[in-house]
Image (cartoon, rainbow, N blue to C red):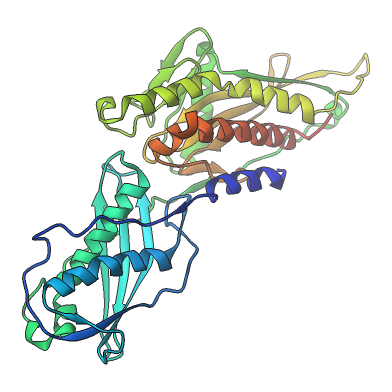
Length: 402
């Protein structure tokens, strides 16, 4: 596959940086204490550019750490602690990781901080916040505030600030660990023709799957995925009729020639204009047409001999749209090669969050608000890139230009 297509997607996914702006700690959230200790809180984080775990966006860890320190200072002052840059007692704080998932409901961001001292104190504090459909910025801002609150309530950190506080605060708790489901990479095959068909003429076609053939395509897909132990379904529509095979995409909204899944929660929970924007953009962006244009551009037609056999080489797009859990642009297609009534070759292309062909890049994933922003710019650009990717893979697996 042309690596420029991968670069395009990486550019889209990595072009934004989350800038932390956490809200103040809520009154009463910090367990009451009083101390006249003198301490210094320093920012030990030097990393300014780090990928957010499980999300295609970066974070300035150094600035995010500073935002947490800004929350801590007025709270410490309110409880009598004296902050001094030259204090002998120093607590070094750093945000070591942000993790984000849209594949759980509600959406969650987790902020992991490390608090250390020269005397051997080392505490990992995690703050997480559930804010369904509110997007990365709001969720992570509140997660940082939650972590700052837990830092002030942590029994070991309180004991470091003032030995008299050793028995105050909270004991350790079992933290929720954010882990992503395994990504299944599906191996692919290339078309190998028998000797008698080496000079055959290729007639290329790109189209949407039709209802009458969906059962056969579903069987093809299921057979290939059973070998991998996967169990996702398939969603597809035809130009004249929309229908849904009830499996992975159950609950999807069907709109024209696409599917939309509202993140496994009721549509009423989503801001109406955002969902309308997404539906409109997906209806107006014809992946089949875009892919067909790319195939025509990449495929050089050649004159065929009059006695040569003709092979029908089809790219059948079975589904495309916005998946749930996580919210990602996904597309599936079948490659089918026939001569007359004889099936010579069949393969699938998977661009899904946790099911991907080995020759495709990661899908475009974001939150609903990001997909709806700028009149669905990310969706339009993503599907335009998908059309290039599908066309390139289609021609590469079937033997390239002919």
